Image (cartoon, rainbow, N blue to C red; front, side):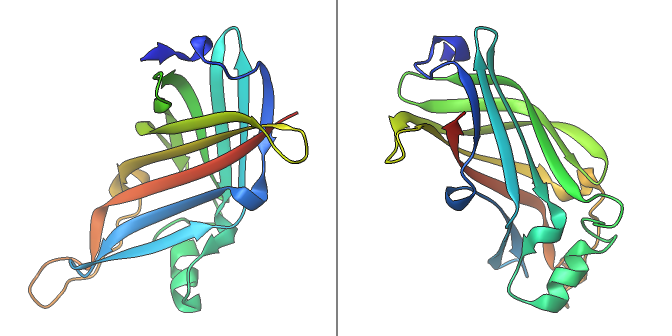
Length: 181
């Protein structure tokens, strides 16, 4: 792996292209399927300097996007995201390593429900490329898995066979397109 300072990403600050960025999650449901949701309000900043690359981001919990309104209300409740007391999910990187093929490892801290835990994510960095607006753009794609109980999301329901409706592990998927300021 190359260190972040050895990449060809131009020095500067990059802001989010909200149209081409997303943050989503997946969790096992009924032991047989995958439930998917996401957030509509995603923000991120990438700072590239001689000191390295730092990524910071947040999603507004109120912008959670699921197809069923009653479920949306439950996810916003204190049993899950507790939007009234914790309106954002936040991430701040501590280390980003990029290989010559663009694959990347990202380490940092994820804060959900006022609980901050270290995480590691794997993914890829693409670019830079100059877009049709003549701005330099970078794309970041990362995935990681967290245990929802680590962030105070313990709600569950028993199935008739004694197993639980929801899985403990939640996959987080982030796709960012960032534009150099």
